[in-house]
Amino acid sequence: MKLNAISLAIILAGFAGSAVAGSQRDLPPVQVSAAPSLSCEPPSDATACESFHQWIRANFSQREIGMLFGARTNYPENLTGGIELLHQRYESALQEYVAARAAAGVHVVIK
Image 1 (tube, rainbow, N blue to C red):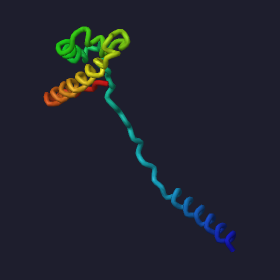
Image 2: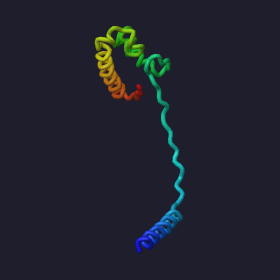
Image 3: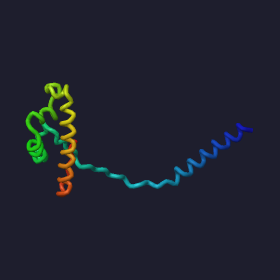
Image 4: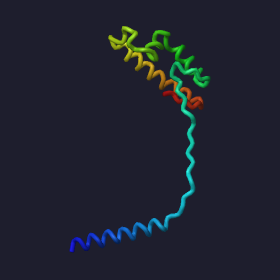
């Protein structure tokens, strides 16, 4: 009895699936486009990043820029935790930079 009920359920599901598949209409194709992503972290030399690089040079010393974007192990601050504090300062300043640019109507993407 159970075998008959299961067989009947499988057959009915097959007919229902083929009926639904036969009644579907073709949908128009969808085109997806995106703006190219630009990474402005140094050493990027893209002209669109010039204002960001000027902002970095205005807010951070050459040594700090080296610690942010260079090899961390070259600096003794790596052992004392100073680099983590610098990265926190950079992240908060970066949020302020992006917010100021957004308020001016300029879309900024910084990875």
